[in-house]
Amino acid sequence: MNDGYYIHSATRPHRVSIDKSQPVRATAIYCDGSVLFSGLKYLVLMKKNKGVSESWERQFIQAMRLLLDYSIANNGYFENAKDMFESFAYRLQTGTVDENGNDHSGLRWDPKSSNSSKRILKKITGFSDWLYDESGGKSELLNPLREATLAEKVLNTAAYNHRHNNAFLKHTFSSSKKEEKLSNVRSTKIESFPTVDFEPKKAFPDERFIDLLFDGFKKKKSKLTDPIHIKYRIDYILITILQHLGGLRLSEVFHIYVDDIIPNEEGQQIRVYHPCEGLAPEHARRKYKHGHMSRKQYLAKAFHMQDRLHMKGRLHAGWKNSVVNETGKFFHVFLFGFQELQKLFFELFRLYIEIRQEPLKGREHPFLFTDNNGDPLSMVAYIRAHSRAVKRIGMTPKLDYSGTPHCHRHAYGKRLANANIDPILIKRCLHHASLEAQQAYTQPQIRETTEALKKGIERLEHQEQKFESLNSINSLANF
Image 1 (cartoon, rainbow, N blue to C red):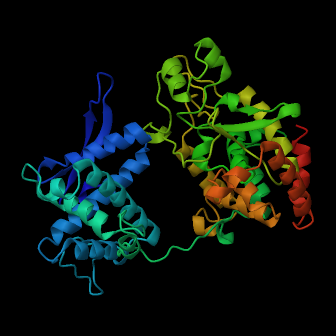
Image 2 (cartoon, one colour):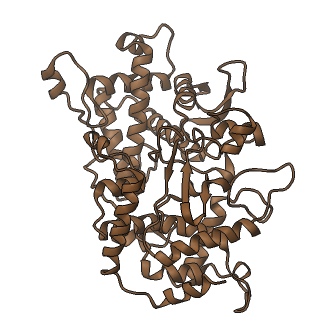
Image 3 (tube, one colour):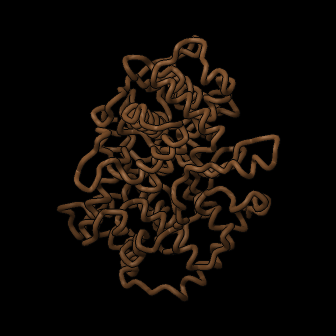
């Protein structure tokens, strides 16, 4: 995070000891030369108990620093904390610069989107709830035993105000009096957020998908007579199919191990395991005589490496809390649409395993996709390749123009909806949480999901146009 963007605070990485083992790495906020200990403690607890990601940590630090900056820049202006927090939420959306370019606060904030504003307030809300409970409420927050720094006073007041004035989100404060519970609706809120699911303009067009695979990912200087693995980037094609036909988020693809895809015709399977809690491969559990070994434990034991969720730098890959099963902590990938491409996917997978760049000795790892050195392929490398491929077929590599990797997931959801797949099944295919709490008991089994998708593709075939370029797939499948 660029410290130059903030006026009244700075950050520094810290190593916090929680026991005799390896310290927890966390970012500390400094204000007026002092560490904001409450923020550091909360961050360490969230890492230890919730396993929050590097992205979550950055967003939390951003939210805290914005609140501190606004509070200190406007110190003494507001009559009460409630008014200050309402104005803070307002300025997140409007910015602090007027139409003439003036900003007497000195903050020079640009307006943030509703989603960004909501995310910032949610991070502050979570911290405020914890701080209120941790400190023992009003007495400790507003009358601490030692003199609080200005930053601590700001956050203490935020926590107290949040709990008692319901300041940030549309929840209610728990009270023994029902009337108070109903009347104390949080006053500061972001304008209503429309629920948008798979906007058509954000879905990568199915009619351009074949072009993307076999024109976009075609290697330069390749010849017509070259073998398929010389002519095309097989790894990029596989990754793109997993997103477009399997609905995977890009980050999920980069947690896949070699063992997670089974190409056998009698039992084809694609699984995505939670990067930390997912069950380690069977051969590893046998080798280490640990029947419940997690992937986090496996990576540390066998390869002396972190899981990619907690890696920093180019090998980091996030995780969006996709729904996984209870036993193995994984979910199944259900390919849908482009039947010939589905067959080709497993053929290309077998070929890729043969030509895959093996890791160098001493740098072994289990991840499926590798770079030219045999190290795990980075998300950045693929995103750049996808951008080049999209441009190559005359499209624009931006979300609003349906040209980014995430647009493939939108296309998958749109395809399911167009085939009139039951919403509960769509939830399962997209690995979202259940539609409503009571519907958790109606989640379909894998067999039911597969059968429903087969019927759906039959319906879809009557709706969608036939692509002439599909004929080329049949010849590719016979390479």
